[in-house]
Length: 360
Ligand code: 13P
Ligand code: SF4
Image 1 (spheres, rainbow, N blue to C red):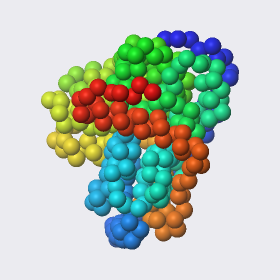
Image 2 (image 1 turned 90 degrees about the vertical axis):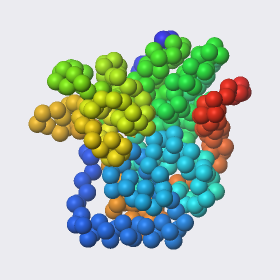
Image 3 (image 1 turned 30 degrees about the vertical axis):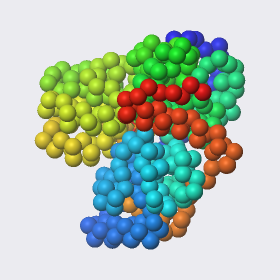
């Protein structure tokens, strides 16, 4: 791996990122919940809207997206799904970069979110100006950014990737002899570097949720369940990834539960994913990978606090008031759409099994 010529103290201080407690939503009676679901379904129809939810959102939202003809997906498929919709309004239940990506790809559509303050520690760890300076100081590198970044950061990138497409894309760039400047997830970056052998310069961001998985506790848990396969999202630290049987995007991990012969799985990612995993393989046993919260405490419980801002209540409120609509400066959008489209074209090419011609 290349060493950065950038001094570490020039990077933003990621320890100062404010991580809120997981939001507390008052529990709903069955009647209240049914009422909210009815209201939301009616408002989606009136507003010609479709609900696009990430796997980490609350099970109620995932179920509602499915029931109303929307989608529940990883961040790559969420981006793709929006572009195929006739609906005039995309309601994105997830975190802000997902809503921004939807707007960048669909400027003619109205994009709203249940809570616009739903950020992501990776996005927060990569403010636009220091990132642009970092890129300018490293000419000759192909700039590849994770989708978990702001529109401004994407606007400076050559490529955007999600975890679902990162390995083949980085392999493709490395095969062309390109050196890669990667931001912002250092764990995903180092996993990609090892998986592909690419020459990569890494920005030092991380995901506060995956950062909490504990390797010794995971090792002990795996010993107790030697027949369990260990499934890990690549935002996790190297010591967790090293113990994995499968490393992949949220979709890849869900697929692993239904396709692998194992009856048990230890899962190292946000526990919102269990809703889909149970649906995909109801007879299999799913075990949460241990975090700091292992044992009595719940300081960390593998739940993204920002994903947690999405609820039936906040969704109903945003549809009712129209608040949390996403707008992107046109000049930024014009630049940011280029690397996102490259990613989608690359993904399409892979699906069709033909070689990629993104040589620009
Ligand atoms: P996926 O693209 O794998 O769904 O990951 C998005 C994310 O933010 C995981 O923390
Ligand atoms: Fe960001 Fe981590 Fe939350 Fe995913 S789980 S949205 S990477 S903070």
